[in-house]
Structure formats: structure tokens, C-alpha cells
Image (cartoon, rainbow, N blue to C red; front, side):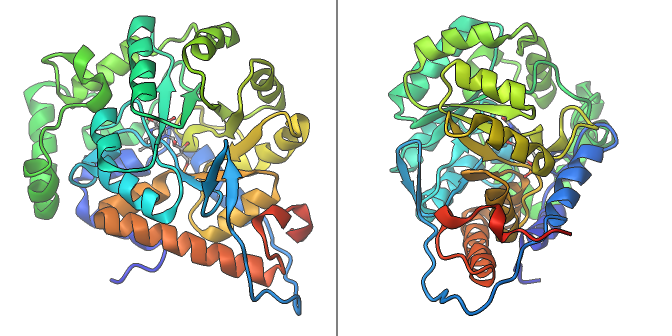
Length: 381
Ligand SMILES: Cc1cc2nc3c(=O)[nH]c(=O)nc-3n(C[C@H](O)[C@H](O)[C@H](O)COP(=O)(O)O)c2cc1C
């Protein structure tokens, strides 16, 4: 199959990844209601077809947080993405750089900040969770600064982790010890290309940024145990003072789904927010980001830049979210599938597809610049 869409890359990812890794990438929490809502509500947003408006030139370029971008899209943080392809986060960051969009490295990446930033020329973004050990957080923030990261994405929607049944069923979660390891080893062996490319040639499989605190406990179960034990559920807006004091670059708060929280983010001096429910991986049953976005964008106005993610599977979806009030859109699973399905080439291809699809959506709604996209290009259903 020659992939021509994000969903084609999802099929490829399913064929190439060991079962537990595909389930981890693809899955949502509990009954996956919110995961489904993100996709369905976005597809329900009807675009307004317009004709005869000279759409021979279409401009996707924009500026976000002082950076010039080829289009208002970024690769959002996806933990463990580096296990989808050999030294995967480096490959994805290269693809993003080629496409002229930011790459955001997760706290819980497979490749460390140092390796990814050495692999690209442009600065990347870095995502951080609130970790109990503030000393370790400061070390990570200092490292991000030293490595020239151009924005900090601070994720606030995971004070406690939501349960993902699919991870338990696949053997990624809850299957510790020798039997768990054997189960995952067998699933890896059933995907010979992955076993060769990532399992063997993609070593070391240490867990990037958190490897120093994991010490000798490098297994996946050690990593998840560390996450459960070290993410800080006591975090409040007051803790943002610590972040603000330590990080003087653009600060983007990710995981906002309520206008009051968006206003609180503006009040603590954030430069941006990401309207997000973690791709339906945290509280199942919360509303989709397509529905949450308009009242949030209206509430904050120009106080900060509103980004959004969740359920984006095409450039048409990007245009829909811009029309609903976002200034930029983060891809999550879309680039994860592409990386698993085709490495750097796959991510480059998906970014080209997204761009081409945006151009078509803009041409057929009679819009020539991303700055002109607003709710006037939406049709009532
Ligand atoms: C496999 C996976 C891992 C993720 N890891 C992180 C993470 O480490 N940090 C974070 O802030 N968000 C993380 N997210 C959430 C994404 O940044 C994003 O909010 C979500 O994927 C958007 O939904 P979509 O995948 O449907 O587009 C992860 C998402 C997935 C699918």
C-alpha cells in the first residue's frame, strides 16, 4: 500500500510495530469515549464551500512565539515515540525542521534532549511535566535552555495518570517481571523489521531524559513506575512561579479544556496554551477539543496564543481548528503513525500531506492566507 493519508500511516504503523507499542500509540483511556469524540466532533465541523475567489496564491506562513513557521502546525510531545523507529525522535525532529515547523520533545522521550538537539540545526521545543523532585526539574529546564530550546510546553493535565485498558491487555502495563518481558519480546520478534531496525540497531533503549534518575532500572515497567511515583499531583498555579522563574523563554501550558483555566494560565504569564485532553488518554468522558476550543479562544482573546490538539488526522482538520479560533495546531498520533510507518521519510510525507490538504481546504473555502481563516469559513450543519 502506498500511503496517501494519515490513516494509511496508521495501518502501516499497525503492521510494523510490536502489538504493545501500537496499542500504546493508538489507544485512549478507559472506554476511549473522548478519543472518539475528538475525531468525530472535528469531522462534524462543516466547511463552507466558496467559489470564484482567485485562490491561485495561498499563504500558510505565520509567526508563533516569535518564530517564523511554514504553516501553523507543530509536532506535539509524544512520549516513547523514539521506540517507533530507530532513534525515532531525532528522525521526527529532522522531518519537522525540513518542513519548517517546530518539533516538541516529550519529557518521557526515548532519545535525550542532547541527542535530539545535536541532530538538528533549528531549536526544538521541550515539554515538561510537574515532577516531585524540583531539583531534577531544574536540571531539565537548565538543560533545555543550554540546548537552545525555543519554547517550553508545560503539561498540566496529568497530575495522576488515566488508565489505558489497552496497555494492560497488550502486556505493556501490569505485566512486570520475566513473563512481561517475554511477552513483549515475543511481540517484537513478530515484527522482524522493527526488531532489526529498532530492537537491535536502535539501541541503547535507555529512557532519554529520565535515564539519570532511573539508574540501572531501565525496563519499561521501571519507567512507568517512575512516572506513577514522580509526577506531582499537588501541583497548583502557584507552582508556575517556579517554572516562570527558572524558564525565561516562551511558556506554553498544555492540557487546558476550560475557559477559567485558560484565564488562569494568562494570569500567571503564560505566552500560550494548548487546548488539549491529552488525545483522550486522561479523563475519559471530557468534551472534545473541537467543542472546548471556541469558548476558550473567546475568553482569552489576545491575552495569549491559543494552540490546540486532539483528533487531527488531516490538513482539513487543521483548517477546521484554525476556523474555531486556534492560532496553531499540534499533531500527536498523526506524526507517531508516520514515524512508525516510514521513519523520517514518513513524517516528512505526512507533513507534506497536511500542507497540501490545508491548501485545498483553503482554496475551496476561498481563503488565501492562514491569517484570514476564521469562523466565516464554517457552515452550519
Ligand atoms: C503515545 C502518546 C504519547 C503521548 N505522550 C505525551 C507526553 O509525553 N507529553 C504530553 O504533553 N502529551 C503527550 N501525549 C499527548 C499529545 O501531545 C497530544 O495531546 C495528543 O496526542 C493529541 O491527540 P491526537 O493524537 O489524537 O492528535 C501523548 C499522546 C500519545 C498518543
